[in-house]
Length: 425
Image (cartoon, rainbow, N blue to C red; front, side, top):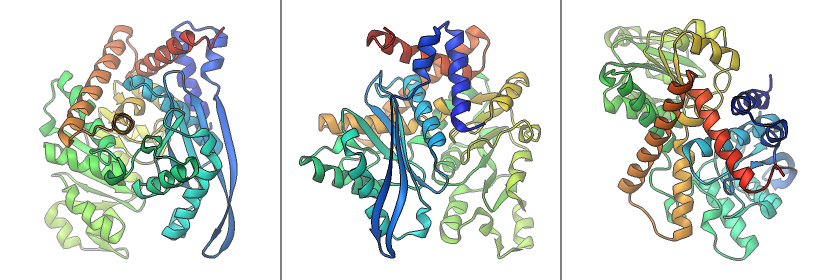
């Protein structure tokens, strides 16, 4: 099943529960615009071409919004799925934006910063007619960052001939970026997790957490939870898993990974591990897939999609799943988890902190009035807690999963906007 088909299932289920007509369902499931291009550029090693996409899925509630990823596996199905999910996510968190996503098929690790700047600028040159503060506002995504956003902004402003900082978010602070953007995805996840635990009357200081994926979002979440008193019992990346029943310090692990490239490097080098130090720390080095079977109360998929399948969830011991990654759970596994009484905080809510602070950045750019760190933090917490409360209440009322509730809220809000705009006439 391709990624878009999975999102289609969730939207269709929500649409049917809301008794939408076939015409309304078809409109919800169709992208407004799909733009494709071949970026022809001259790099340090000569001319090359890169396939690029921008899918503008739905703008009934406001300008399109969504990141641009540089990834060798990026394809149209993936970008389309992420654009559709972004439309739902913005509606769930209740910000006046639509859903879009972009991608370039490239392995950025194989190219210099100079080459990446050329490619970033070429992307904007190709898609400039479709971008803008009132049209479509890109942001960072997988393997893109604030520096790449700054190149794209500069290229866009050069082409249109005026300053327009709000046409892109995730920028450096010096160019109109917002405080809190780097940690927003993880911080938003913390807010909804704390809300859930409070409802379950569980003290978070005794909650054991396993995090699959130790990139920016996973590492930031680990550090935030650790500082709040959670016990981080396991973390993993593509090279291995570290587990310690008594807990790990993610600040130390993040520093080691940054320096040496893997969480396992805390104890192991070239396959040889310091068993004495591991025994002293009560830690063990495991394979990447062993992260699914460790003893934990909370499991956080924070890397790839489709990692929670009917097979992998049989290994899980956690009663709560916080989806920091996009689309990490297959529909079949999602149904089984609900039947087993496992609470899944879905991606369209759990990782919505990123787009929420992107929205804040866009608002600040438009007003030319900038907020303090404390103001951003307060507004993010309010948005996440309000959205969680609405999703949780609907789930209780209808005896459905949090994912079903979130999609119903998202679809309902998007449909209402489309009706007012006469989309279904």
